[in-house]
Length: 343
Length: 148
Image 1 (cartoon, chains in turn red, blue):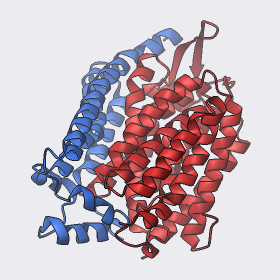
Image 2: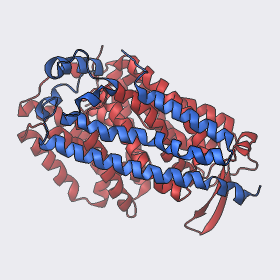
Image 3: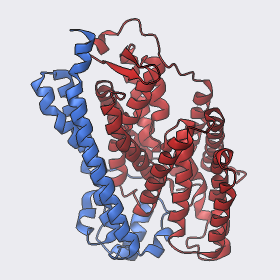
């Protein structure tokens, strides 16, 4: 079995400062890329943070260094994810598996828990604000969560290099989706389909910018539900979360307003990722030393990201996210195929 | 039924779900942070010493479990599934309480809205909620084992 991206080439116990610094090189490179959008907002802070980590890598070789680096990187990831309008999970798995010394099994388990925690934290507010729709989520979640179990089991059964290759291809596919997909704030739904009418999937919410009460309904529900099979399988297999897929299905295909789609997608992750996370947890793919710093980092980063969003340029950050995903996807693909990469 | 009446209909269970989710989410996160504090502070001893965890996380999960079991746990079989419950005296395994609460809160949320769905005779959603509970319980049970 191949290790996580050729990690078998690395020494099992890294104890010398020089080797540790070499090993930290790739994460630090990712860190510097993640810092780029922040530099647009606060250009003086990024070099300082990088310097601190570089010196930490060179001097200290203690058990707490990796969790600390993970905390800092996921904190920045949380900021970039909010500014770029993507979930943390989709950044977490390819970047951490590509540039950190953790095996893909643990990264996927951790990624699911990170995405799950974010969804659980956001869920109550979104449901209370009537932005996430329980009636829209329940049928989709039943299909996606069942298929996420299958995805997780398949993902854990397949050799790592195959999953790594497929992950790389999926990430690159997400990049294409981000470049091509046009979101629609208020899709036109002339008539609700029979299934959504029977299930009474509809709602009303207040658009804050205009104060207008928006009534919404959906169409093409059967096709949408079929697509959630693929969404669930991929979420479970790669531990990515699935916001990147949920939103296009709910918004572009089924015609739910963008705000409802984004909010329901976020809430939906709390159900889809629960089933997959249990499979990974029961298999032993959860290391608390990885999970808790990542979870805290992403949550704090998301919190700060929401504040920065007021002054940042979303279009610019969106391009940073696309470049990051392109880079991480290419890294995952080349790792899986055993090809050389620039880092 | 009018559009407003239709949308109001789903509000009761949605708000109930949100309320239960909020309580479970906070409980899980608070417990997770407390137990992680106990773990990294050294107040309680972990099963794998803190300075040795990084020696193993590059291994695939099966190799990881075998190696760590051989070097530290010394059990007949590595602790998969719910076996972590038997090792709660160790601070690293204590973290799984919070993780399990985060993983279990959705099941509790679904169970909480079932009486409302029964009362409303919303049979389609009742069936889906029951099925979801079954699916998530099956996933959590540890029955579904996989191997490389």
